[in-house]
Image (cartoon, rainbow, N blue to C red; front, side):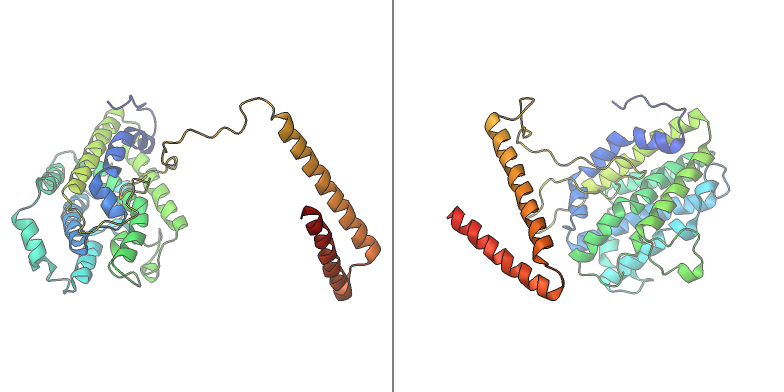
Amino acid sequence: MPSVIDLSQPAANILRQGTAEAHERAEHSQGAKWLARGELDKEEYVRFLMMLWHIYDAFERALEQHATHPVLAPTHNPGLFARSANIAADISYLLNVPEDSWQTHPLHVALTSSPPPALTQYVDRLRELAASPDPSRLLAHAYVRYLGDLSGGQFIRRRIVKAYGLEDGAGVSFYEFRPLGGGASSSSAASTMGDLKKIKEWYRDGMNAGVGDNTELKAAILEEARLAFDYNTALFDVLNPPSTTSSSGSDVEIDSPLHSPVESTPPSPPATDEDPKVVYEASQPPAEERLVSLSSVIALVAALSITHLVLVVGGFTGERGFAKLEAFQEWFAGIFGATAA
């Protein structure tokens, strides 16, 4: 049961807190783990991109249709965010076909001939919102997808590059964003993590400005964001399992494709079956351990004193001094080595 959220907060805070449970369900789905580990067969990954293309195409058309809506306008920046063209380019590259022909590829024909219910429901919901008198809830879908691409998507990009042997950014343009405010000259420049952070901050500010202080609107967008996470979880659930599984495919904490759409506390280390190690249960260490520690300190002080004396008196400076120092170290080690034996 979702916890009660203080709707007097800015919209970005409300969405971060209010979608935590839905986000956790999404990132722990098996399909999300396969994707995040780069374990999907290449053909299945392409099929996943095809499903994403239909989703982005639907809600980006809707965002463009309502570009001047007061809730959506502050975050509407298709030159920065639009993903559908990038996804199409990646699909074409991975299939090794021209961009204008991938939709007739047998893999896409099979997908559209018998689409998974999860995909149909997602796209139908986006079209329903686009046709609605109040399309404000579209902001929730843009929030979940775009900020997920800017966050966990960057981790996924590295796994995809390694899994499918991609080079020079080819096949992963879906995950690439140009710097905020960049013109045509920077369209091909890769964004740094600092650039991505600025984009997310800009988006949060725009989202807060668009939603304002309207608590009913905040509640509606939160409800829709939870639904968007559920739609994405359902998409992960229809992914086919990999033909081979990585030997490192344990349930470690990894970034999901929807990880941290708004910066939050980093995930905790994975739990283990071992009890936490206790150094000392008493307020002080046992007497024997205190004696060992004291003798170690005395030995250290003595060694430092001898070293200081030798350096000052022996004149260990310059090249000749360094040679003397090496000879002294050998002599010193020989004495203590013999003593230890």
